Image (cartoon, rainbow, N blue to C red; front, side):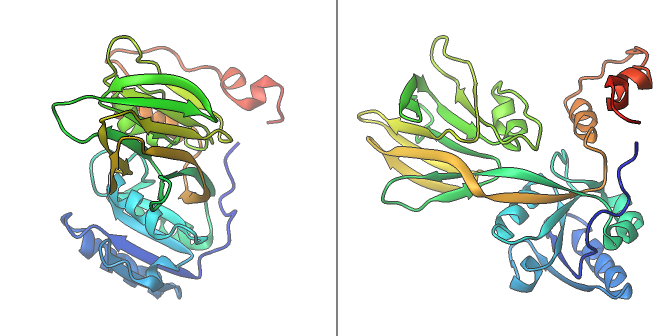
Length: 301
């Protein structure tokens, strides 16, 4: 059964944030601003580095760029009720919803309140006595120099689970499970999962397993003696660490709220396509509707 075409309140104001480094991003933002205003809705635009307050405070923020731009927008609107709609002008587009060619034709639906809200867990990383950071992807404790591995102790809610000699340790959200964590062998979580993932980076010997934790658990990563490292959150916020420092990572009280126009199963389609899971010549017949849909499991069609 198709999802409802108009299930949300139409936005009263729209912010447009674009990546000025991408060809055509500023021009597309200007075109969309005029199209939105022509429909009687307030629209403001800015580039991703300016972060104008009236843009961030909009009901809907349309982010024009790649996943990095969407990630940046999620940080900008954190703590507000703004919905994020990503338009892919970059390469991968795991976080985006529409391509450049689709945004104008779907604009009418967006302004009418079509779609659904997808809430994604954010995480919070802190070091006692120092500033804390919120992130959408991951918190990474990594080595400070290229030539030397680091010794890290990892505890979950006060219980020691590992002592790693490694290049670093990643604590990722479901969103981050398809980012850095995926590149070092971590599992893929559904984007609306509340779980966290611990993944060691290049661990010495055989300690290569990832651990999936429920959202209620907290992770502590402690530097052993004579160690130096860096805490990086979403690849942006870096904090130098010294021996004895302990990084605490937990789920954040904030959530990133995305506007989705496609069905939830689109995540699997996009993932399989971008990761190259479909082999040429794969001609298996799709499951019959009675087996491949919730209705076939006894639900009401």
